[in-house]
Length: 93
Length: 206
Image 1 (cartoon, rainbow over the protein chains, first blue to last red):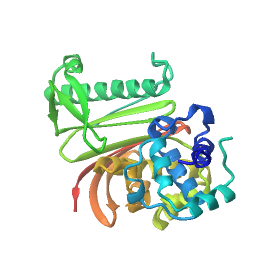
Image 2 (cartoon, each protein chain N blue to C red; image 1 turned 135 degrees about the vertical axis):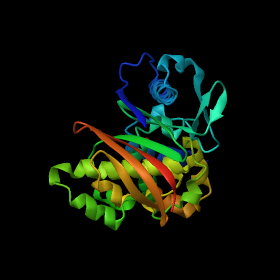
Image 3 (cartoon, rainbow over the protein chains, first blue to last red; image 1 turned 180 degrees about the vertical axis):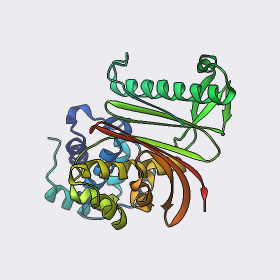
Image 4 (tube, rainbow over the protein chains, first blue to last red; image 1 turned 30 degrees about the horizontal axis):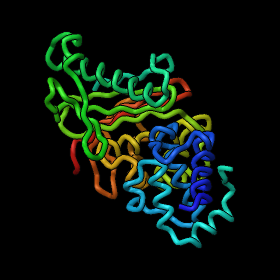
């Protein structure tokens, strides 16, 4: 995956959970880095806001790790990610 | 139902996520040991070394006693720093438990997970208890979804816990999941103004 998108996704995660970007890796379980279940739900809402569309629970049913989010984002149309990158105020850099 | 709610900041494991899992196993093991001892009229010390846990493919924990899964001994574990909750119910059905720190919610977050009826029920609480009531609403939904299996893989707004929001500590209420009614027994407690914990035993669908 394009490293710009990975950095962007890490940025949303860090912004939601309050982590430092250099502490996040693809293999980390979301349940290990999220402080609680409300924070996990807020992460979903932040991704919906960034992507500008609703994310169905079927789409995220198998997402358990940071890498799973990165893999899901890789399936989205490039223009969706481009729009998100340009309009959402999150960055891991 | 046996529920153990603790502050696990002093747990002797340095890695935070491992500490959380160790604390969860500890409270769950104690809750199960006490529940079995009461059921069998024996000392809980007789059971702690015989109790272990396994998880099903959806991540839901199940009690093993002497290496054998017991579907009549239900367990659920939850964490919200710095609290850990372990609940055991000796019943047929399904159990889910949740503990959350009480916090102010962004309006868009509350609207995203609450039904219109739930928002009305929460609005009837005094203004000083709005954060508690909203957190309780989330916690009840999470407990229900954990009991039925999907956890956060089902949208929380698919669960309607309006009838439980009027309970103060313990009682029965009908909760709805995607419009299907379920008879439930509910337990609620709070840690001052800091945290709320609840457990839901789902008896059956109606």
